[in-house]
Image (cartoon, rainbow, N blue to C red; front, side, top):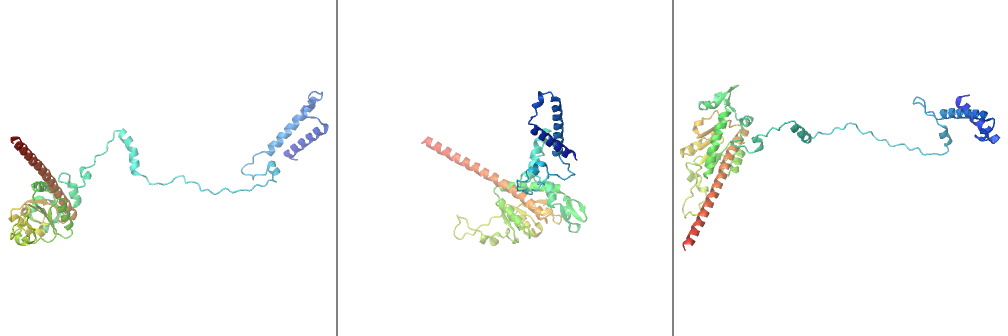
Length: 356
């Protein structure tokens, strides 16, 4: 017989003897046979403890779970077994895109606490419109203004502006480009400040939009198609019929065309006639002179590559900004002059009223 069965048999035997005699556990406490009763109680307690240990022993994971006596006694109660819903485990690591801006903003206070300072932005990046003071040689280099023509097309007069030769291609010195461009901007600004007429000429295919945009940005005139010979030298016949009459013109008077005060040529090779006409009437000219162009034919040459669309656009924008600055100065001067005239008229009226 096993230990659990032996323990249960001792419990049943003791209970039967107790109920048959009608004595409780404390009946023989005052009798002379108290020592025997106490010994029997100890044996009963040992048997009960042995049975409880066998009944409530937790099974090991290697052995299958057995049904306990408590579960067997309540087997008549049927309970519905509900399977729990299958829940997918949450991933421990979720990949999310890193917000670089927020990360840098979070690290900025710590960076400054160690004495770090942010690098200032270049002025050219802050100002989207390049001017003669903000444009740099790096921008010229990126636009390809340093690339000249091959040595077979090299004009000897452009030799002072050539830095060297690379694989048969002339390399223009961009330092000369920057200094000559600033000088041309000074002239353009001065002409615009005096209220002069500025004419942009750029007739090469693919660059007509550059000429139009540069002229419109500074309220200047432009020729984006083929130059008509005689537009300056024979303006009465070429331009006169298309020029509107002035308001104070008399009947029979011919329209008087105005000549430009400054001519800016973006492709001088195709517009040699326009340059010669302007030179004949002592009109200053500005032109982008490549290595195949004689820079002495214009008043203010700008040694640069005239075949690069980006380079020509950059130079045209810089010149247009100079003309715009001159227009602003002219407007401020006209306002000051008008204010002075009005104040002078008011003073004269006050003096006249005082004399009366």
